[in-house]
Amino acid sequence: MKSMKKFLAAAVALAMVFAFPACGTEKGGSSADVSADGGASGEVLVVGTEPTFPPFDTTDENGNIVGFDMDLIKAIGEDQGFDVEFRNLEFDGLISGLQAGTIDIAIAGMDASEERAEKVDFSDPYYESSLVVAVAADNDTIKSIDDLTPDMKVAVQIATTGAGKAESLKEEGKIGEVVVLNGLDTAMMQLINGDVQAVINDTPVTKMYIKNQPDKIKIVGDEMEPEAPFAIAVQKGNSELLDKINKGLANVQSDGTFDELLTKWFAGDGDSTES
Image (cartoon, rainbow, N blue to C red; front, side, top):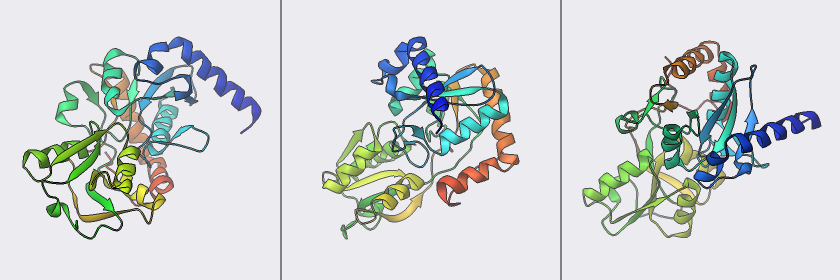
Protein backbone atom coordinates (compact mmCIF):
# COMPACT_ATOMS: atom_id res chain seq x y z
CA MET A 1 0.00 0.00 0.00
CA LYS A 2 1.42 3.40 -0.87
CA SER A 3 2.51 5.63 1.99
CA MET A 4 0.03 8.38 1.07
CA LYS A 5 -2.88 5.92 1.27
CA LYS A 6 -1.65 4.78 4.68
CA PHE A 7 -1.47 8.39 5.83
CA LEU A 8 -4.99 9.20 4.62
CA ALA A 9 -6.44 6.06 6.22
CA ALA A 10 -4.74 6.89 9.51
CA ALA A 11 -6.00 10.47 9.40
CA VAL A 12 -9.58 9.38 8.79
CA ALA A 13 -9.36 6.79 11.57
CA LEU A 14 -7.99 9.41 13.99
CA ALA A 15 -10.79 11.79 13.07
CA MET A 16 -13.36 9.08 13.75
CA VAL A 17 -11.90 8.49 17.23
CA PHE A 18 -12.76 12.07 18.19
CA ALA A 19 -16.04 12.15 16.27
CA PHE A 20 -17.36 8.90 17.79
CA PRO A 21 -15.61 8.38 21.13
CA ALA A 22 -18.42 6.31 22.66
CA CYS A 23 -18.62 3.84 19.81
CA GLY A 24 -15.18 2.39 20.31
CA THR A 25 -15.29 2.27 24.09
CA GLU A 26 -18.90 1.49 24.95
CA LYS A 27 -18.51 -2.15 23.85
CA GLY A 28 -14.90 -2.56 24.86
CA GLY A 29 -13.30 -1.26 21.66
CA SER A 30 -10.59 1.32 21.08
CA SER A 31 -9.25 3.53 18.36
CA ALA A 32 -7.53 0.44 16.94
CA ASP A 33 -10.95 -1.04 16.23
CA VAL A 34 -11.64 1.49 13.47
CA SER A 35 -10.57 0.91 9.88
CA ALA A 36 -11.34 3.21 7.00
CA ASP A 37 -12.27 2.24 3.49
CA GLY A 38 -14.50 3.61 0.96
CA GLY A 39 -16.13 5.01 -2.03
CA ALA A 40 -16.75 8.22 -3.81
CA SER A 41 -18.43 10.83 -1.61
CA GLY A 42 -17.88 12.77 1.57
CA GLU A 43 -20.59 10.87 3.48
CA VAL A 44 -19.01 8.39 5.88
CA LEU A 45 -21.17 5.75 7.57
CA VAL A 46 -19.99 3.75 10.57
CA VAL A 47 -20.38 0.02 9.99
CA GLY A 48 -20.39 -2.25 13.03
CA THR A 49 -19.26 -5.85 12.84
CA GLU A 50 -17.82 -8.64 14.99
CA PRO A 51 -14.74 -9.89 13.12
CA THR A 52 -14.36 -13.44 14.42
CA PHE A 53 -16.77 -14.95 11.88
CA PRO A 54 -14.73 -15.82 8.77
CA PRO A 55 -15.20 -15.71 5.86
CA PHE A 56 -17.92 -13.12 6.51
CA ASP A 57 -16.03 -10.98 9.02
CA THR A 58 -12.45 -11.39 10.21
CA THR A 59 -9.12 -9.56 10.52
CA ASP A 60 -6.05 -9.86 8.34
CA GLU A 61 -2.43 -10.17 9.45
CA ASN A 62 -2.26 -6.39 9.92
CA GLY A 63 -5.36 -6.25 12.11
CA ASN A 64 -7.58 -4.75 9.39
CA ILE A 65 -11.24 -5.78 9.42
CA VAL A 66 -11.87 -7.75 6.23
CA GLY A 67 -14.23 -10.37 4.85
CA PHE A 68 -17.12 -11.01 2.49
CA ASP A 69 -19.41 -8.67 4.46
CA MET A 70 -16.82 -5.90 4.41
CA ASP A 71 -16.32 -6.14 0.66
CA LEU A 72 -20.08 -6.31 0.13
CA ILE A 73 -20.92 -3.18 2.11
CA LYS A 74 -18.01 -1.32 0.46
CA ALA A 75 -19.37 -2.29 -2.96
CA ILE A 76 -22.84 -1.13 -1.95
CA GLY A 77 -21.36 2.13 -0.69
CA GLU A 78 -19.47 2.71 -3.90
CA ASP A 79 -22.66 2.10 -5.86
CA GLN A 80 -24.73 4.43 -3.68
CA GLY A 81 -22.14 7.13 -3.04
CA PHE A 82 -21.11 6.70 0.58
CA ASP A 83 -17.89 5.71 2.32
CA VAL A 84 -17.62 3.33 5.28
CA GLU A 85 -15.72 3.12 8.56
CA PHE A 86 -15.62 -0.31 10.20
CA ARG A 87 -16.12 -0.60 13.95
CA ASN A 88 -15.26 -3.72 15.97
CA LEU A 89 -18.02 -4.58 18.46
CA GLU A 90 -19.14 -7.67 20.27
CA PHE A 91 -21.91 -9.41 18.36
CA ASP A 92 -24.58 -8.79 20.98
CA GLY A 93 -23.67 -5.08 20.98
CA LEU A 94 -24.47 -4.49 17.32
CA ILE A 95 -28.21 -3.98 17.68
CA SER A 96 -27.82 -1.78 20.74
CA GLY A 97 -25.23 0.22 18.79
CA LEU A 98 -27.78 0.83 16.03
CA GLN A 99 -30.43 1.77 18.56
CA ALA A 100 -28.08 4.22 20.29
CA GLY A 101 -26.93 5.70 16.99
CA THR A 102 -23.23 4.94 17.59
CA ILE A 103 -23.15 2.93 14.36
CA ASP A 104 -25.16 3.44 11.17
CA ILE A 105 -25.06 -0.08 9.73
CA ALA A 106 -24.50 -3.57 11.12
CA ILE A 107 -23.29 -6.37 8.90
CA ALA A 108 -21.87 -9.43 10.60
CA GLY A 109 -23.32 -12.64 9.23
CA MET A 110 -26.49 -11.68 11.11
CA ASP A 111 -29.73 -13.52 10.39
CA ALA A 112 -32.82 -11.35 10.10
CA SER A 113 -34.84 -13.10 12.80
CA GLU A 114 -38.29 -11.91 13.83
CA GLU A 115 -36.95 -11.01 17.27
CA ARG A 116 -34.21 -8.80 15.85
CA ALA A 117 -36.60 -7.26 13.31
CA GLU A 118 -38.60 -5.84 16.22
CA LYS A 119 -35.57 -3.73 17.17
CA VAL A 120 -33.93 -2.84 13.84
CA ASP A 121 -34.81 -2.75 10.14
CA PHE A 122 -33.25 -5.29 7.79
CA SER A 123 -32.28 -5.08 4.15
CA ASP A 124 -33.24 -7.63 1.57
CA PRO A 125 -31.45 -10.94 2.35
CA TYR A 126 -28.06 -11.59 0.84
CA TYR A 127 -27.07 -15.06 2.10
CA GLU A 128 -28.72 -18.21 3.42
CA SER A 129 -26.61 -20.28 5.78
CA SER A 130 -27.31 -23.63 7.39
CA LEU A 131 -26.14 -24.77 10.83
CA VAL A 132 -23.84 -27.68 11.62
CA VAL A 133 -22.46 -29.51 14.64
CA ALA A 134 -18.66 -29.49 14.96
CA VAL A 135 -16.67 -31.83 17.20
CA ALA A 136 -13.02 -32.57 17.81
CA ALA A 137 -11.41 -34.44 14.92
CA ASP A 138 -10.68 -37.48 17.08
CA ASN A 139 -14.24 -37.72 18.46
CA ASP A 140 -15.82 -40.95 17.20
CA THR A 141 -18.75 -40.88 19.63
CA ILE A 142 -20.73 -37.97 18.20
CA LYS A 143 -21.74 -38.69 14.61
CA SER A 144 -24.76 -36.35 14.41
CA ILE A 145 -26.84 -34.01 16.52
CA ASP A 146 -28.79 -37.06 17.70
CA ASP A 147 -25.70 -38.30 19.54
CA LEU A 148 -25.58 -35.29 21.87
CA THR A 149 -26.50 -36.31 25.41
CA PRO A 150 -27.62 -34.58 28.64
CA ASP A 151 -24.13 -34.81 30.15
CA MET A 152 -22.50 -32.86 27.29
CA LYS A 153 -21.49 -29.21 26.97
CA VAL A 154 -22.05 -27.35 23.70
CA ALA A 155 -20.29 -24.04 22.98
CA VAL A 156 -21.85 -21.24 20.92
CA GLN A 157 -21.28 -17.60 20.10
CA ILE A 158 -23.57 -15.24 21.97
CA ALA A 159 -26.78 -14.07 20.24
CA THR A 160 -26.26 -16.25 17.14
CA THR A 161 -28.61 -18.72 15.49
CA GLY A 162 -26.36 -21.49 16.75
CA ALA A 163 -26.88 -20.25 20.29
CA GLY A 164 -30.64 -20.35 19.81
CA LYS A 165 -30.46 -23.91 18.51
CA ALA A 166 -28.34 -25.03 21.46
CA GLU A 167 -30.70 -23.42 23.95
CA SER A 168 -33.59 -25.30 22.34
CA LEU A 169 -31.68 -28.57 22.69
CA LYS A 170 -31.06 -27.82 26.35
CA GLU A 171 -34.74 -27.07 26.97
CA GLU A 172 -35.58 -30.41 25.35
CA GLY A 173 -33.15 -32.15 27.71
CA LYS A 174 -30.85 -33.28 24.89
CA ILE A 175 -27.72 -31.50 26.18
CA GLY A 176 -26.61 -30.55 29.64
CA GLU A 177 -25.04 -27.10 29.30
CA VAL A 178 -24.77 -24.31 26.74
CA VAL A 179 -21.46 -22.46 27.04
CA VAL A 180 -22.11 -18.99 25.61
CA LEU A 181 -19.00 -17.09 24.50
CA ASN A 182 -18.40 -13.67 22.95
CA GLY A 183 -16.34 -14.93 20.02
CA LEU A 184 -16.58 -18.02 17.86
CA ASP A 185 -12.81 -18.38 17.92
CA THR A 186 -13.03 -18.87 21.70
CA ALA A 187 -15.75 -21.48 21.24
CA MET A 188 -13.61 -23.40 18.75
CA MET A 189 -10.61 -23.23 21.07
CA GLN A 190 -12.68 -24.71 23.89
CA LEU A 191 -13.68 -27.52 21.54
CA ILE A 192 -10.08 -28.21 20.58
CA ASN A 193 -9.01 -28.15 24.23
CA GLY A 194 -11.76 -30.59 25.23
CA ASP A 195 -13.62 -28.15 27.48
CA VAL A 196 -16.82 -28.73 25.47
CA GLN A 197 -17.96 -31.67 23.37
CA ALA A 198 -19.46 -29.77 20.43
CA VAL A 199 -19.98 -26.36 18.80
CA ILE A 200 -23.10 -25.40 16.86
CA ASN A 201 -22.61 -22.69 14.28
CA ASP A 202 -23.13 -21.62 10.66
CA THR A 203 -21.83 -24.00 8.01
CA PRO A 204 -19.49 -21.74 5.97
CA VAL A 205 -17.88 -20.31 9.09
CA THR A 206 -17.32 -23.77 10.55
CA LYS A 207 -15.83 -24.94 7.25
CA MET A 208 -13.43 -22.01 7.34
CA TYR A 209 -12.25 -22.99 10.81
CA ILE A 210 -11.78 -26.58 9.63
CA LYS A 211 -9.73 -25.32 6.70
CA ASN A 212 -7.50 -23.44 9.13
CA GLN A 213 -7.44 -26.31 11.66
CA PRO A 214 -7.71 -29.40 9.41
CA ASP A 215 -6.61 -31.92 12.01
CA LYS A 216 -8.46 -30.38 14.95
CA ILE A 217 -12.15 -30.05 14.05
CA LYS A 218 -14.70 -31.90 11.91
CA ILE A 219 -18.38 -31.56 11.01
CA VAL A 220 -20.75 -34.38 11.87
CA GLY A 221 -24.28 -35.13 10.70
CA ASP A 222 -26.54 -33.23 8.34
CA GLU A 223 -26.84 -29.49 7.93
CA MET A 224 -29.76 -27.83 9.74
CA GLU A 225 -31.97 -25.22 8.15
CA PRO A 226 -31.53 -21.64 9.46
CA GLU A 227 -34.22 -19.56 11.12
CA ALA A 228 -33.72 -16.70 8.66
CA PRO A 229 -31.25 -15.53 5.97
CA PHE A 230 -28.46 -13.04 6.59
CA ALA A 231 -29.29 -9.36 6.03
CA ILE A 232 -27.86 -5.90 6.71
CA ALA A 233 -29.32 -3.98 9.67
CA VAL A 234 -29.98 -0.27 10.18
CA GLN A 235 -31.66 1.75 12.89
CA LYS A 236 -35.42 1.26 13.10
CA GLY A 237 -37.19 3.75 10.85
CA ASN A 238 -34.15 4.77 8.80
CA SER A 239 -35.92 4.12 5.52
CA GLU A 240 -33.63 6.40 3.51
CA LEU A 241 -30.51 4.41 4.34
CA LEU A 242 -32.33 1.11 4.01
CA ASP A 243 -33.47 2.08 0.52
CA LYS A 244 -29.89 2.91 -0.47
CA ILE A 245 -28.62 -0.42 0.83
CA ASN A 246 -31.34 -2.38 -0.96
CA LYS A 247 -30.72 -0.55 -4.24
CA GLY A 248 -26.98 -1.02 -3.94
CA LEU A 249 -27.36 -4.69 -3.05
CA ALA A 250 -29.57 -5.30 -6.07
CA ASN A 251 -27.09 -3.53 -8.33
CA VAL A 252 -24.02 -5.45 -7.14
CA GLN A 253 -25.97 -8.68 -7.47
CA SER A 254 -27.01 -7.89 -11.03
CA ASP A 255 -23.67 -6.58 -12.30
CA GLY A 256 -21.66 -9.63 -11.21
CA THR A 257 -19.83 -8.03 -8.28
CA PHE A 258 -21.67 -10.19 -5.75
CA ASP A 259 -20.69 -13.42 -7.49
CA GLU A 260 -17.08 -12.24 -7.66
CA LEU A 261 -17.09 -11.72 -3.90
CA LEU A 262 -18.59 -15.16 -3.34
CA THR A 263 -15.80 -16.70 -5.39
CA LYS A 264 -13.16 -14.64 -3.58
CA TRP A 265 -14.28 -15.57 -0.06
CA PHE A 266 -16.02 -18.94 -0.50
CA ALA A 267 -14.31 -20.33 -3.60
CA GLY A 268 -17.80 -20.40 -5.12
CA ASP A 269 -19.08 -22.64 -2.32
CA GLY A 270 -21.94 -20.70 -0.81
CA ASP A 271 -25.71 -20.37 -0.85
CA SER A 272 -26.39 -16.76 -1.72
CA THR A 273 -29.80 -15.14 -1.84
CA GLU A 274 -30.28 -12.79 -4.76
CA SER A 275 -33.27 -10.51 -5.08
